[in-house]
Structure formats: structure tokens, C-alpha cells
Amino acid sequence: MSEPTANLIEIFSAIQGEGLNVGTRQIFVRFGGCDLRCTYCDSEHTWRKQPTCQIEITPGDRDFELHSNPVSRSQLLTWVTNHNLSNLHDSISITGGEPLLHANFLGTWLPIVRLATQLPIYLETGGHRPQQLATIIEHLDLIGMDMKLPSASGEEHWTAHQEFLQICAQHNCPVFVKIVVSKNTVLAELEQAAQIIRSINSQIPLFLQPVTPLDQPHSKAPVAPEPHQVLQWQQFLKQFLTIVRVIPQTHKMIGQR
Image 1 (tube, one colour):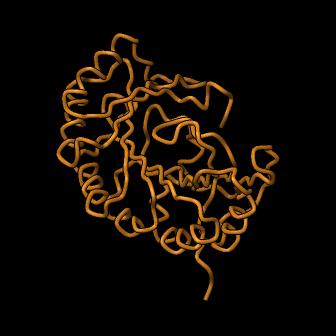
Image 2: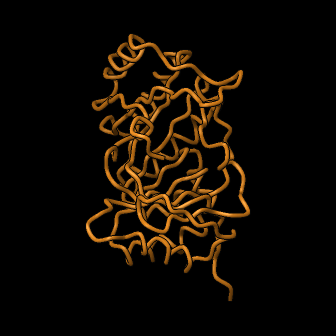
């Protein structure tokens, strides 16, 4: 019987620049393919599966090698364990694209890599695929869920976001929510997001992330919010939730991927 395979974009070692793990060192495993088309996306190369992936040889050195897709479960395990230098990384980031498109593969690979590396598994996801989450949540240690505001992203998945958070609560899996905000963010949408989070648990941390201007902006690209907007939004959201933090994409400030 042939091994399970998956389509990768890249593997590399870097500093996490967003959310609850900001500032920590992670092994990033980026999967190819995404079913969303967020207007602020800075990783359009991950939207579709690619014929090749780039694998960093030495953690942090950016000495990439190209390999063909798809990648087998054992090969991916070897690459990640090779990155697992003693006391360097705090966790493994499973990202994309949308990694839950690879839920069948992850269901067989995550328990193996977790055991081999003894590192926590952190899932970065759009939070719109609750059924796929349910199949792998037992192998996760933390979930970072993007909640999409229609005014900022062009996407709308309120019901799926609520179901997603409900599954996290049912399995006692730690989760935080990240919301990208732009100059055109609508207050009513922020309130709807807060109400969904509070209906599950008002202690779930919420991170507001001011949109980062794209290198090559297009007509629909959102504009970063004004400082006074962010202050007002944080104050407003604190009426519903205990933890509301504002963190931009810090990895871009220090030249990290």
C-alpha cells in the first residue's frame, strides 16, 4: 500500500510574527492549496497546489532546495525531524494555504511527528472547515483561527466559524482568534465576531491585526486602519471579551518570512 502524500509549499525555521505565539521560534510546514480568496492575502502563491516545494536545509539559513510534489509522509517526517535541533524550536506550525484541506494526510502524520519531535503542534487556519478540524483536533496543542470579516477579507463564514470554535471547546483544545482589520472595517461585523466568540467562551483571546499593505497592491487591496480606529475597536470589543490585543505582522518588521 502506498504512503499518504501531500502538496507542500515550503518548510523553514523562523520567528512567529502573529497571534499568541508571537516571538517564538517555530518549524513552519506550509501546505499548498486554499479555498479562500481574501483580498488582503500576501501569499497568493499558496492558493493552488505547486509542482515543487522548497525545503530549508539548515534551520534559519534560507538555504533552500527544490523538491517535487506531492511529498510522502515519511519524507516530510524526515525533513521536519532534521530541523528539530535541540532546544531551538518551541512548536511546529502547520500552515498554508489552508492546511485543513489536507486533513486526511494530517490525521496520519501529526501523531507521528509529534512523537518523533516532542514538539507541540500549532495549527494556523481560516477556521471555516469545522468538519475537517474534528478529524485531527486530538493531535493539536493550539489553534490560531482567522475569523474573516467581509468588509476586510471579502469572505463570510460566520456559521462555520461558530461551529469551529464549538469543536475546540468540546475537545478542550486551546484556541485564539485573529481578525485582520482594515480602514473599511465595519463595527457591526466586529460586534458579530465578538458575540460569536463570547457565546463559546469570553476568555478566548482575540488578536486584532491591522492589515499589512501588499507589496503589489491591486484595486481591491484593503488599506491599513488609522490608529484612532484601532483604539476605538479595542475599547469596544473589551465590552464582550476579556483579552483583546493588537499585534501587527511583526515578522515583516524584522525581515522574517
